[in-house]
Image (tube, rainbow, N blue to C red; front, side):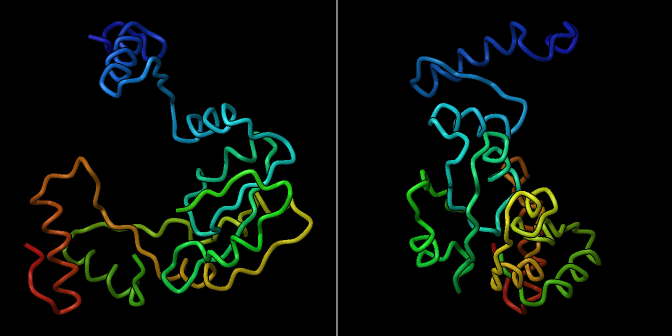
Length: 191
């Protein structure tokens, strides 16, 4: 119905969905957005994030995690990851300064290239997202007077493999991916 109407945004179908989602979640209002970046930017605006504010983020995260900060004039403060490949809490704590207004917290495979080849032979596509960490992205490096050295983050971008697993995937397709990975590591089926 909505496709035939030609109204893909701000139409009656969107308004109806916003009302249904608000009722379902128990909120008064609901706003649809065109992307994660837009919605997070609006969220940060509502939180009062603006020019000069600093928010601590792990360098190894999806670019849209920190991109809205740049749009608002805030400064992402990059910290490295720890041995478990999550935000290094000691670095995060030492990065807290008077202008800090928040912290945005966020499958390592040491044989990434071998696993990727193994899965491709089984017609399972994978991806290597963010081969360059955020603190080294050209969109960011020119904004700051110095670029931090974050050795763990710079190492894990060479080891992480994005797998084709998502919430809309049929269970048998997800099992196929899991079984191939367990086969690669010489373990039994994940079912």
